[in-house]
Image 1 (spheres, rainbow, N blue to C red):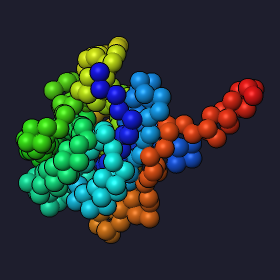
Image 2 (image 1 turned 180 degrees about the vertical axis):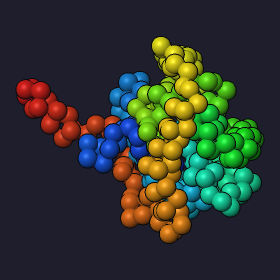
Image 3 (image 1 turned 90 degrees about the horizontal axis):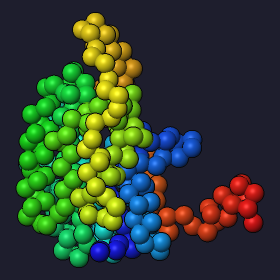
Length: 271
C-alpha cells in the first residue's frame, strides 16, 4: 500500500473549492476532501493547496509549478484547463502543452501525479452545446499527456452522474458539495487508496423527474441572466475572478494544526 505524506494540489477554482462553502465560512472542495481521506491513512500528512480561481492552464503552469516542486511533494493533483474551454481563443494543443510540461516536471521529481477529465458541459446546460467539441478535444489530449508521463487519470466523463444537476452549484460552472465529494472519491479510486471503490460512479437516488420544454427554457434564461451575463462581463473587461487572490494554503501543513484542534475542542466543551 502506498502511503502519501506530502500532498500538493494545483489548479483553479475547482481545486480551490469554489462551490463547496464560501469566502465567509471557508472553502472545502475536492482537494481538501481528498486530503482528509489521505490523512485517515497517514495522520502525519502535510497538505498544500496552491490553486486560485479564474486561472488558465498557462497561469497554473507559470505561477504554481515552481512553488509545488519546491515543496517536494510525493503526491500532486493537477486540474486545469476548464477556464480555457470557455475562452474565445481556446487552443486544445496549447492548453495540453502546459499540462504536459507540468506532468513532466512533477513526475520527473518523483511525485505521483493525478488528474481528471472534464464532463460534457452541454449535458449540464444546453446553452453550452457549442463547446462540447472543445471538451472532447481537451479530454483526449489530457489522456495522451497523462499516458506519456505515467500520470493517473480519474476519467469521469464516461459516467452519467457527473452531469446530474445535484452535483453542481447554481452557476453550473463549479461543483457543489456533493460534486466535490464525488470528484475526491474518483481520485481516491484512481489512486487505489484503501477503502476507495467505484461507488462514485453510481447515479443519485431518486432520479430527477423529466423537465418539460417550458421549464427548460425558463431555467436557461434565468441561468443566463444570473450567471452567464456577469461572467461575460468580466471577460469583456479583462477582469478575472482570481484577481488579487492568493493560494489559500501555500505551505505544507498538517491537515488540522494544533491550534485548530484545540479551538474545536474548546468549542465542544473539551479541554
